[in-house]
Each structure stands twice: as C-alpha cells, then as structure tokens.
Image 1 (cartoon, rainbow, N blue to C red):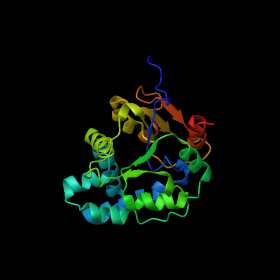
Image 2: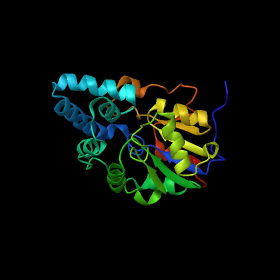
Image 3: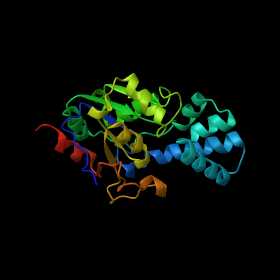
Image 4: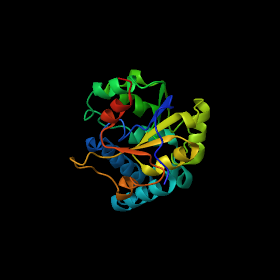
Length: 230
C-alpha cells in the first residue's frame, strides 16, 4: 500500500465549498436540498415523494440534480440556480480561526464547487473568508458539468494554470477526490465531527478508507493549522 501523499510540495490549495469550508452539522445544504425538491416537483408536476426520488436519482447519476434536469427535461441552468440558492445563510457564523489558517498556507487558494459564484459569495461573506481566496471555479465555469466529471477538473486546472502534482484538494465527498488523486493531487476528505447530527445520504458519508483519499479530518481548521508554517 502506498503512503499518503504529503503537503511539503504544495503551492495551490483547492477547496470545495459546501460542507467543507463550514461544518456538516450546520445543515445549510439541507435548505438547498429542499429547494431542489420543490423545483423538481413544480417543473415535472409530480408529488413531493416522486420528486424526491427523481432528485436523488439524478444527483447520484449525473453529479447534480441540475445536470439531470437539464439533460432530460430542458431546464435552464440560470432558472434552476436562482431558485435553489435562495436560502437563509444566517446559520453560518464567521470563522476567523479558519481564515487565519488558510491565510498562512503558502501559495494560491482556490474554490472548486458545483454551486454558483453567487452562492460562493454569500457563503464566504457569512464566514468572513472572502479575502482569502484567489479564484473561484463554479458550475457555470464548468459548462454545467459537475464534479466528479473528469473534464470538469481538467478545465479547472487549465483555466487556473494549476499543476496538479503541486496541488491539494479538500472535499466532503470521497467520490469527488477520485479524479484529483489520479491527476496527482494530494487529497483530503472532510468528514462530520461525530458530535452533531448531520443530514446526508449514506453514500455521501462513505469513502474514508478509499485508496484515493490521502487524509481524513473532522476539523479543517485544526488540520490546516498543523500544515501552516509556525
């Protein structure tokens, strides 16, 4: 078995947004999840129960429910994103300790998310992290092809001139780390801390022992603090 990759060579730090830069138990994504269900229900004129099944099926098969709705039902991305991201961000609280840990990392810090820039901006504003990132690659930049599609990572690397062998990726879904690891990135899975209830699908919490996961943490701030130059 190969040893986990380290961070001594890393000069680009890539972060997912939801359930990565804020704790799982905030359950902010639960609000988005409910809005997605409403959108599917209204667009397809089905019961909430049927909409839920369709939503989760598309999420698993296409990477996002939006991709499935676009591919199979002609939904416009702008309409979808505007609806599902209309949520209350107030559960998020400023996290100056995380900001300090990110600021101390050597090199660039980028966000790679299946959400929209508008959602990223709202989340970072609440967390007090907006000044700590050098760029955002969102679902629109990805041509609406979500992670874990290989072409999405390749486009991200090209657009931001990232050498994957000198980059680290932080994610809350293990399946979204498969391609980054294959490309040469050091991978970190961010998991719930185990003390608070989280609302997730079972498959979303799997993969801690996967070969493409180099490191696992339930405390991103503490983990980054150990990496930063003292």
